[in-house]
Length: 80
Image (cartoon, one colour):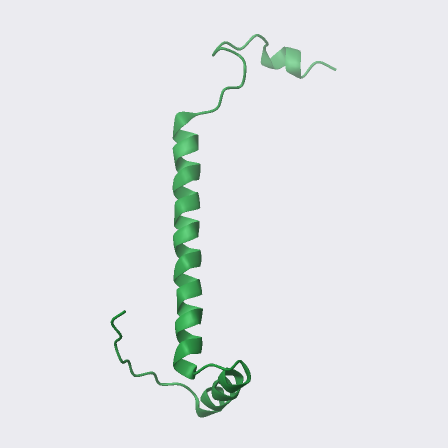
């Protein structure tokens, strides 16, 4: 996998805390950030695929068992 170096500007206190967390997790700061970003990208892709499936199902419509004909009137539904 090709790698690309980047420059981040973070508050010093956050950087120190993140480095300590990475050490506790047995990884590097780069590895921890890569894992976090990978999870974010995967979650976004899954959400987009779910949205596409929803839109596809809505465009196809749903079989409500009426055969396309409504056998009741509004007044019949709201009789008391």
